[in-house]
Image (cartoon, rainbow, N blue to C red; front, side):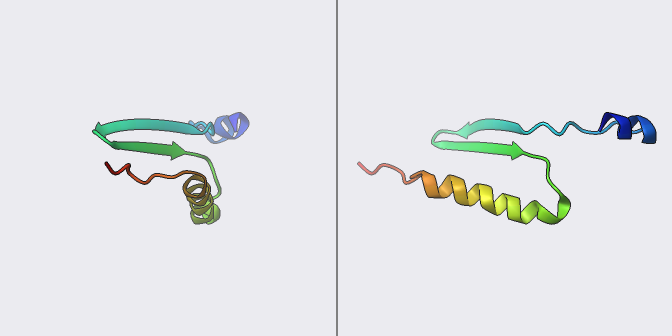
Amino acid sequence: MKCLSEERGVDMPTVEPRATIQVLVAGEVYLIIRIPGKSGQRSYIEQCILSDVLSDNDFAAESN
């Protein structure tokens, strides 16, 4: 990536995955994940991540 950046004279964004957690409202947590991927695989990667997260966790609110 560094060679490509120098060759074309453009700053390339980092390819490191990033995660941001935001708690804007009590009881709601927003998880923003940024990962590098090919443009043609974007939807596939998003669906794989969602499927993995939702299948392994129970996000149902506790009822009193």
